[in-house]
Image (cartoon, rainbow, N blue to C red; front, side, top):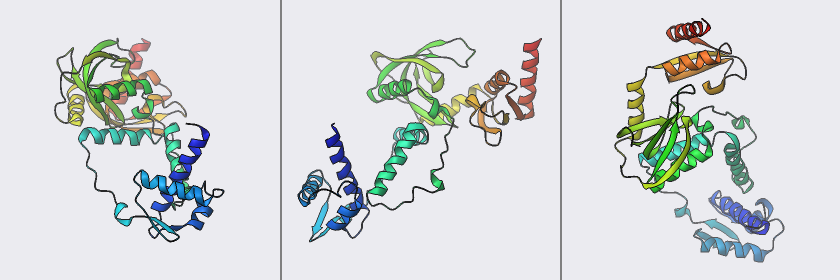
Length: 302
């Protein structure tokens, strides 16, 4: 798409949003004065853009000088999502909170406002909160490969480490989906090596690729329930408060007033991770986890 095509698309998009935001329509003069891209165009260009918008399905109503979108086309029908679709939407929302994708989303609102929508984008609601969780740490190639394999029902192979110090394992899976749970993201599917449904924390996967084979095992039950059942069966989950030196939160998250609060995290993982990050990270509570961290550090020092 060349710059001229981009300008035309930008102008027509602005016009569409401006008309959607006006229950009683807009005059041609208002459009030329307020909609970005129309300040220097001719009446002929405006008329052509209106014809194009109609041809692609925008239900325009033109009455004299007033241009509007048909009122019965403004309200969209209710949307129902399957559990898998809801998971995808939820993950997209999490990914959109941070980094370049979040900036892109906010810039979209800015363009809508320029086209006539009324929303103050300069206030404190734009203060950026960047969540430090699995959705912001996932490698784009890993995410893309998994989502493509799920959509096309293709088998995948990957390397998995239960923790940074554990030996890597090669696994093969018929993937069912990615499930967010308590700030983490899990790959769920049928594990061919274990011959049973399994879940794996996605940020601990590497070398993810499709095998070229079709996935033969369809999804079983609710994916969220599979993840939660797997976590409760193989681990003790705890809530914890950590004291963190500025800039040293690492995989625990971004500290607020020098502290990180964790919910439903694996106790064994927390002990190992906190010991490895000491003294920049100190477990304040629970006392049992703090005791285990101290014991592990003393054992390593002896």
